[in-house]
Length: 139
Image 1 (cartoon, rainbow, N blue to C red):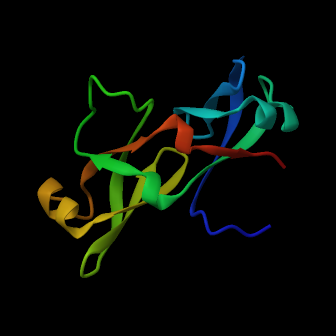
Image 2: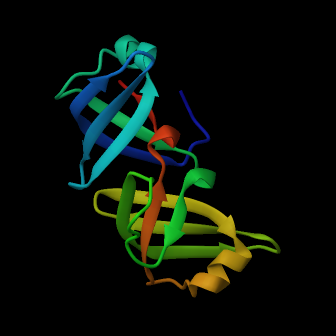
């Protein structure tokens, strides 16, 4: 299956916590970072997720926000440090490629946000991703 979702990071499940309707799934990405996904309990069961399960974490580029430093007091669970490796700016929006340990992410943000953050190729950034915006796939 070919997907339009650019952000596909490989990892291994380290923990699954089941609730009545939702489950949180903690991953260790191949680059060593930790990522959390919040998916339906039904999806976690259908995928047979358990510690040690290999998975792909999928995140649309429009669901990746950027900061220039780690953010405290925020409900967003996933903060991945990286560096800007590519920057394409259009009339309104920009596509920002970020190298993170073990892979690459793309963030689609406004042109104004690029200017406000002072981003350039080589900038250090933190990619912010809500756990509810992380989808999981198994082989």
